[in-house]
Length: 270
Image 1 (cartoon, helix red, strand yellow):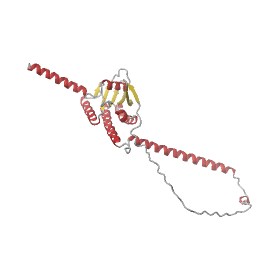
Image 2 (image 1 turned 120 degrees about the vertical axis):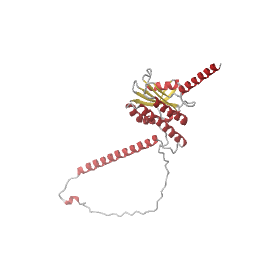
Image 3 (image 1 turned 90 degrees about the horizontal axis):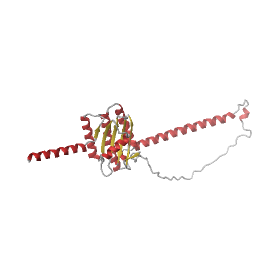
C-alpha cells in the first residue's frame, strides 16, 4: 500500500514538474540556434520582464512556418498557446524563420501601443546586424533589453504624459527643425536669385554718355523738408501657446488580423 502511494505521489510530482516546464517555455528553439545555457538565460530575462511589467515575451525559431508568413506564424502560436498577460493578452513575439531568412516581431494587446512602428524600427535596426552575422543569442539578448527598456519608458510616459519627452517626440522635433532650416535656405536662395536677376535686367537699359551734361537735371535740384513728430507708442503682447509635439509616446502602429485578433509589429529579411 505504501509503495503504491509513493508511486502515485511520484507520478503526480513528475506531471506537475512537466506542466510547469511547459508553461514556462517561452523560448521555442526548433531551428537549434541556441545552446541550453543560452535558452536558460533568455528564459530568465523573459520571466523578469513578465514579473516586472506584465508583458509576455516569446522567442520562436523555426526552419518551417507551415507555409505561413513569419508574422502570422508567430500570431498563431501566440493564440494557440493562450499567451499574454491580463484580459487584453499583452505580449510580444520574436520569430526567426531560418527557412526564409525572415524575422518578425509580433505584438498583441498593450504591446501594440508600446511598440509602435517607430520603436519596432529602432529595435530592428539594432538586432538585424547580429542576425545577419549569425549571432542569434546576442540579437535576442538585445531584443529583450529593448523590451524591458521601452516598457519602463512607457510607464514613465503614462505617469506624466504632458512633460515626458519620448524618443519619438525628440526625433519628430529634430525633423521639424531640419525641414524649417531647409525651407529657409531654399527661400533665401530663391529671393537672392530673383533679386540678382532683377538688378541685372534693370541695368541692361543704361547707356554710356560721353557728355557730363546728360547726368545733370535741367531744372536743378529742389530740397523739401519733412518733419516727423513722435507722439507715443503702445505695445500689445499676445501669448502663443507652445506645443512642441514631444508629448506623443510613439506615433501609430501598423496592424494586421489573425485568428480574429489584432496584431502589430514588423521586421524584415536578414
